[in-house]
Figure 1 (tube, each protein chain N blue to C red):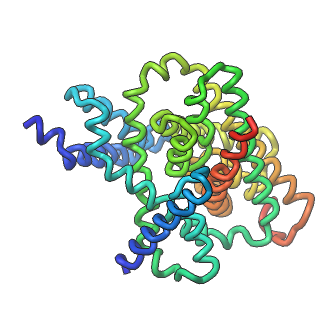
Figure 2: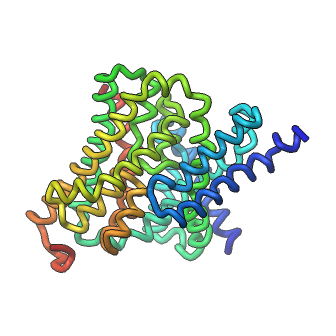
Length: 229
Length: 122
């Protein structure tokens, strides 16, 4: 019996099942706090702790899903190509804003990280947090971070931006739909984009484009900032 | 069609891993693969129709792939317990800084420089 629970199919079933429950809850409650990923993470942790299964066993069982992160990042190249039409005529604004945002994101994490006396591994885990999850995780691993911390922080980054974002943009007089969409996508990746789609069609489209561009900008800037610091 | 798409994605993943090693591993292989696939699509080397179905299937359900990594926090409990104030403050402050700098600059450039798209905003 124990072997069945520890098998690869059982581990995958746990992840997919928890996520499925998460999507059902999300559909019913419609709140950013019950995001399917958060619900699935918590359910998995609860089940593993209850059954006394340790993380390495779970990790071995779900290696297939980890592998799929790689091809998914490659597939983002196609999405970026598809969204290219939203860029036309606004190239300069979009490029300068995304690159600045990516730089501000990395530099502010590193500086505040020193201020809070966090160790190197934690700073490395937090630095790529505005990138979309599949890009942030390998970047964090590459620079000596802990993928688990990155996953949770990237998720929180998405939630913070999508909940406070539109309100703060209003307060600061950022009203242009392109600027708003770009800001939400750059700061809060896919979770920010689902909020941007609710604000309007232009906001949603530009925000989707910003996810890919920010991911690229952070991958290119991160080695540079590391080298500078 | 699906096989073609899977082949293309895996091919660019493998080439991306190679490219990543060539540049000393500063950019992960999957990200290199993404950039190369994007370039190949722009240059017309890969036809969009060949990768569309697989690319959409992979990206539309991507969120479920983040769950295993997130569950890893159960193994990092001590580290988080010791540093949660810093982690939480940085997450909130830095996210809002990115939001305002990106939005502010985009709006500034849009209003002050060119206006090719006259109907794109207020």
